[in-house]
Image 1: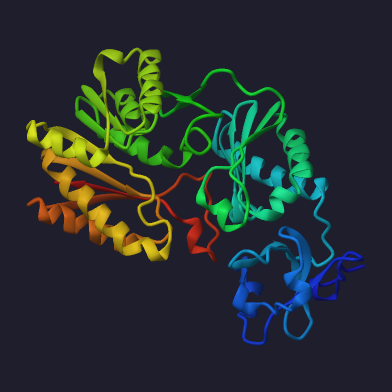
Image 2 (image 1 turned 60 degrees about the horizontal axis):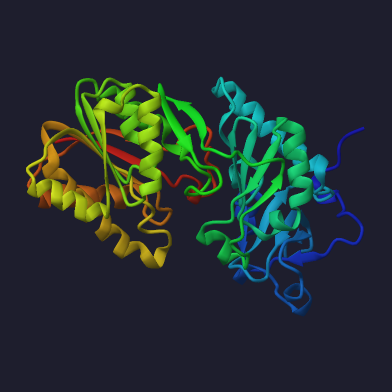
Length: 407
């Protein structure tokens, strides 16, 4: 007996139905694009009354089933594709299957359970981020459907991973776009009382899972930090926007002569200092707390020079309306950082802005270095690590860019 095609499958009984407008790009959705925008959906009174996070059957304008979606009438992304099978039931078993696939992929790439376990749409869980720290998982349910179905999601997560603690992190602008609150919470188990040790690239990082930025550590930069570490033997290294010492501690593990970490957060720098101490590298590590732009200017006035300088700022262009201002900020960072790089030294510039694509970010960086009178040669372009897979149909899933220049 053959399995019926998804077009022939019927939705589970009682499930709401939503329908595309005739001019919607049904072809793109059928070929893997995971979102439906408000102007593409028939938004009658019944659809508008659906609660944010409602699971529904999506049909095209000819009433042919396209899959099971999560609906949020409050969001510009009114539907997120959950499953192409129109008879799918979104329950604990369904979550477990998605999580098993995600974990199996990471287990092939990492020898310890410290990685991004779920990267939203690319792992089949739209808007859901899960970072794993050994026996603790930090969950960001950034879409209304995931917030609505937290109970089966957490149950499946604990069953599949064997983790004993699940922490909900509700920080970030994405939740507000979905009409969600910013209240973080302990969902299961007992939260770690102290920062968690994470070993990456030979360095030791301290991740604050309850009070730190985002989920406590940025796993996405792992390969770029490894590249920088490979350039750092015997080098003087400056790590700007360092957080808990992302690039500077990797550089120390790579044999750097010295590393200076600059960040606005005293708490993050304290964790970076503790990490350097646990590595036995505290004699080569120093910090400066303050505004990064001001610190770069101050170092230039002091005549400071470094062999490797890395700038890894927050998203200056988190949305299209912020793009122009964001690109000016990236240009300014490059202009201020370039004079601190010694002759034939290395400048690494990073962007985690969705709205600034690689070409625009590279152009802004080159303009800034040119304004500083430096002649750059691009030696390496890096992206997020393999635990942050990209959905090819969704450009937003490939947000991180790291450019390394020899000056």
